[in-house]
Image 1 (cartoon, helix red, strand yellow):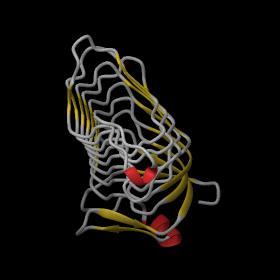
Image 2: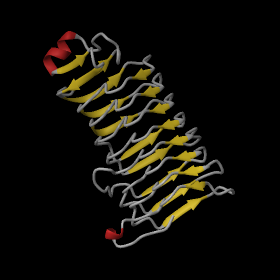
Image 3: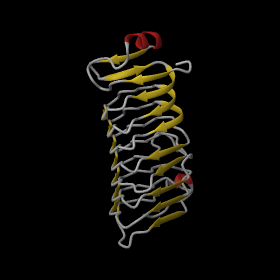
Image 4: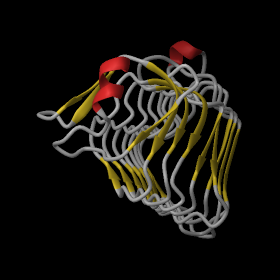
Amino acid sequence: YNGVTYTVTDIGQPESVLDETTMSNNALFYDTLQEQFEAELHVDNLVIKSGIQRINTFVFVNLRCKNVTIPDSVEIIGSSAFWMVNVSTSLNLSNGLKEIGIGAFSWTNLPQTVTIPASVTTIGGGAFEDSNAMQYIFETGSQLKTIGAQAFACSEAPGSALTTITIPASVETIGEKAFWQQTGLTKVVIEGNNIKAIGDKCFANCPTLKTFTINATTPPTFGTNVFWVDPDNGMMTAS
């Protein structure tokens, strides 16, 4: 706050994770019953202490900050952990991260580019739903297996920020409506031979999508209306 970096020493436990002075001066409160913060402040940097392995459900809500750094010890980001958080400058995810939970960064204002560490195996349903990043980069050597339903969807209103996406070769399943209503999306590339299933309406209501490339030698199973576009948008594409 006012240029000061605050360090979270524990997350999702029944005791307060911030010292008494910080809580008092900056209106950051910890609800022991809900195991979450209600954030009513702006900070420059949120630095989570190394050694924490899991960030629990709804820990940070409505936090406004410039930079978030998640240490390599963190393996799981729980459901809606950063729901409606505003991260204006940088989001540094753990290099040991394995799971990004359901809605973990949903309704979140994110930096233009978000890098998904190679260690991540699961992106939960709605993990980045209705967030505004312009680019998602999957690190070389990605171990990602599953992209959940509506993981990158724009459900509340069409989104135009995301224009291209390259899905790593390790991915086996992409859930229904995973990229629903990304109206600026023009190009999708799915690398490698591991893709097995693409869910219903996965790329539906993406009217500018012109290039869709799958490099697998065996085509995956497609759900229904994968590329459907609402006729009100002027076109319809069969799945």
